[in-house]
Length: 296
Image 1 (tube, rainbow, N blue to C red):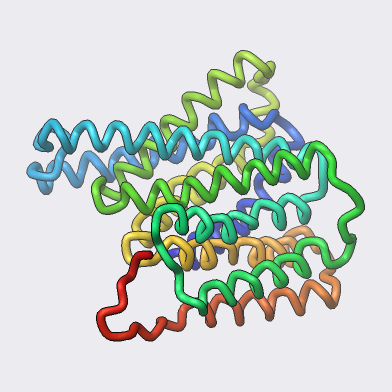
Image 2 (image 1 turned 120 degrees about the horizontal axis):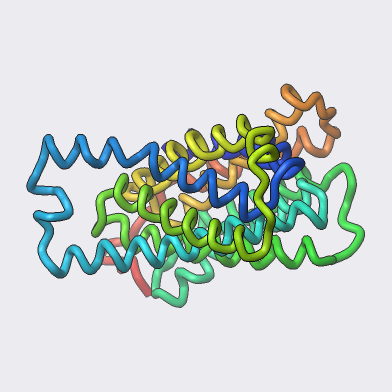
């Protein structure tokens, strides 16, 4: 599920870059997140009818509170991260944004250390290799020639996405995956639309022109991929989940080549290979010693 989500997000990079040619960042994110939320609502309603015991009304007061808090927390973090990333595209190259954003896969295990979670050695080695691969893929052809506003926004975005991974891991076992997904999109969409009316001037003609990228980003990137992330993280350690999801950078390069006809540099091909090796390495289960604790 997590690799499929990464593939969908890789193609979403193409959609996002095309959509930004017509509308502002808050407008794009606000509409696509609400679309993603509305796509999932029928699934929740059907599920509630088939299994009334798991509906929101049937939950205890404690579970209702946990659901609301989880949706607000995860949705708020997603709103910050997605909009920071969207606006970073206005100030720097897509490759740089992709690489800097992917730093969240290194930040997740670091955050985990403060939560007394210890990833296995193979994950740490995979993370280092993953960063090298991502560098070759995203900036191998152009290099880094300075840190500007776009780089700073992308770096802040990586922090937000790292906390998003950790937050989902915390609530995934407490809240239904589809409900959490739908709720976080709705929160992000509402907050982004509020910012849209305050900081931007939405134009219906421009929104229609950006219709296909917005629909793809809303239905596939939000409605499908984020749901796969939430469901997939139930069975995956946060550090490994961040590694798998970072394959989106690999797929973004591939889709950019076939759809936008962007030629890959040799270093970028090597980066793809390094990333796949890193993913395979990170999935190797660590050998536990007898009575070895899983937490520090």
